Image 1: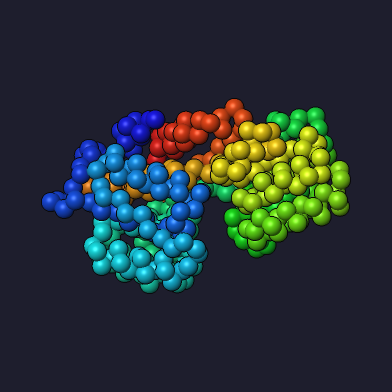
Image 2 (image 1 turned 180 degrees about the vertical axis):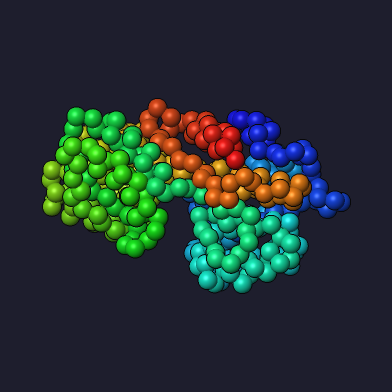
Length: 320
């Protein structure tokens, strides 16, 4: 781990302090999904920052997507008088009053993967969707060199910003490849059963497909499972998104070639670091919109993800 290096790189002048005045720092992270395999990486990064910097790290949130429950937990953090709040504004309009209240009370707010107009949060931390797509496309292009790129994309739902922006990143790069063709853009509503049913139909409809690009977590595993049933694993290159356990296992057995890992660990760590530095020194980061980074995971690095997180973190922190 390079966490001690991370702390040194990211701390502003004045050095690490464990208290703001005589009060021990407390930061609350209100997650949209508690005990979720992807968001849990944010918890690990957030708690690691708490250990490294010496603040009390409180990680709370609902078991399922619930805007009202999240707002209630932000309200609780305000009542407790925490020094900082990190959260994902699931519904920006609904979150606006409570976040404005937090800022008015002098609480430092960092938003992750979201923005709320009219709220003076000190930073936004999260994946640059277009950059993720472009990085993923470079990996696909390198691995598919000389082979036809007949692509099926699958996202969570139409008109959702994240999958559309990621896809646009892929297409910025892949559209320059001769013979690139999009066979279909499908959606699964983040439901594994729906995703598998869709791929059963897609493989029958497009037997010449060579490449699957997932822009939601279910797409890669669903594409791989159905490809196994159809006996076409060796004929289809699958690029997934997020290194959850099931996806990692499918990479290990060769059913999925790669996945683009969002640096959720860094989201938790960097957000906490930004608040800590602001509370202890009064300085905001040089960059408001902080890309937490992403990187491809293959058989070569699937069992060394922390090295990937650390490398991405150092790259980000060097620029802030």
